[in-house]
Length: 95
Image (cartoon, rainbow, N blue to C red):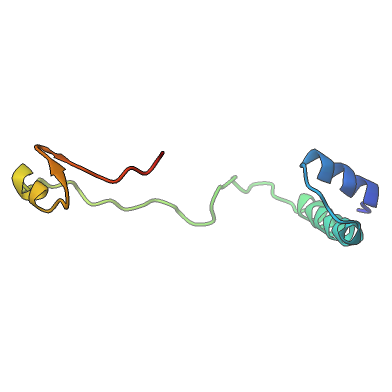
């Protein structure tokens, strides 16, 4: 599919991109190639093929939760570089 420089400029303006004039021809050629490829994909016969989001299963095996002894409050606070009674004091990140 033939894409013109003007179409590239129009799409760039819509996307708020400032493209240099030197790249417009290259972009037009590349976008035309991409659209040609999409046309090729559109012609592929996919009848009888179930739609999929991934080629392979994306299931993440999770282990069962198990209760374990936790660190007691005082032991956790003992590791703090700075504390205030029952709380950790951490550096301010957002001003």
